Length: 281
Image (cartoon, rainbow, N blue to C red; front, side, top):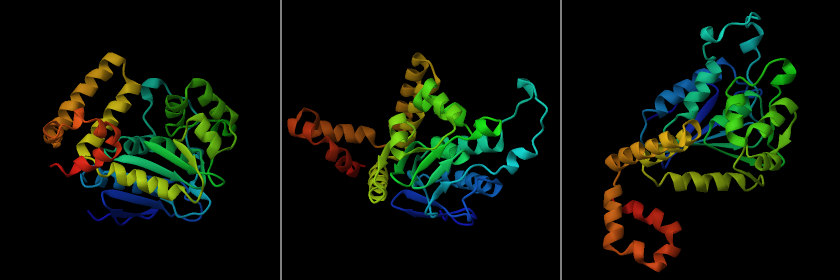
């Protein structure tokens, strides 16, 4: 599938990985053109079973994705509405689509990710940030509103209530190391190591079956949103989905035929075996 025709980023694909590089001068503002591009990208990725991992990064040396365009809100009505009348904002709908992509999504953050840019990163499955370059912030409380691209909702799920309120109500910058300590990112890395780390992880994930990747995502997200009894049912449901669409049975049979599960040497070597067994179709 050709990924072209975007105005706010470019896309290259190789080995089951889509590399999405934001490039929308002057500051990668998160406006309607970017949301339109992201929805178009989601349309294509949702149908592409060959792409297993999507990595989002930036061509700007200082910015990942800037805050949401203030034009979204400056013309918004100042009259409060009832809960029954509320509809999701375009920004919320778009970032939810990114969150629900069947592929594994990774944000490689090497610059500012404030406001909507931070909320975009939170909508990805995994986040890695460069020391000395990445900066995060939710500034909305100081503007008289609240994070409204899923930030207030996803933040607490990511870091817990108290830390989420500290970040949202404090409205100040924090760097990659503090983000790792808070739990808003997976890992802080030296700037000269982040690309290799993300590339290695993306390539490893891309070895695995498309359906298995999606099943893992669905069940992990269900574990956050559902009571444990319902989450366990989701695990079982997605187990059957993956068993019906992947060579899992053949791989279990191969392991059994070769005594893999009872071989102590294999117990020590699972890190490599999980890649090698991908050759069993």
